[in-house]
Image (cartoon, rainbow, N blue to C red):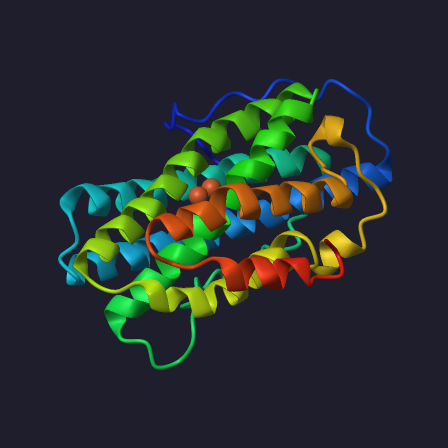
Length: 255
Ligand SMILES: [Fe+2]
Ligand SMILES: [Fe+2]
């Protein structure tokens, strides 16, 4: 991971660390932001691939531009997250983990359906949740560096989620999208696995929202609220019934 950000004036300066953090806390916060840096690298590669798929599908130029911009945003986010993580622990546990941006969805989808699946799963669902979690991180964090980083990421992630909804709207004009309803529980389940039930999050014994490390019960509350108030109505608006997804959510032991 290259930490240099020379020449990128869109990266905000990070103020000096304002509070003392215990060792366990340093490791937890570093793990959180190194993990996010990896996810941003993976996201950049994914947006690159989605951009190519949009071009092949002759998508609207403004959405292609939005996707290209999202890839650049994620590359910038990766640098910022790594800079923040390194303040707490310079060792990146994800340094050797590839970021393959593996295609999402079941086998057998044609390229256009695969593109739509990924735009909904990764962009509408995951980016909406990202934005909701970042908003809470920003609002609760009192540490200036964490606040600055969360603020810088937040506005971009909101734009990314909008790109996903715009692609779903465009696709709904082009043809039938209701088939996505059967896959919505799996999409939300994948996002839950990343944000709530991964071993890293489950095993965290330390949390401090003032440093941007949200406790798990708060993450769950944000996740559920976003699924019910943002994702479900968004899907329904374009003809993707959210009932199955909401039923799946109600049945989860962590809700
Ligand atoms: Fe990002
Ligand atoms: Fe994003």
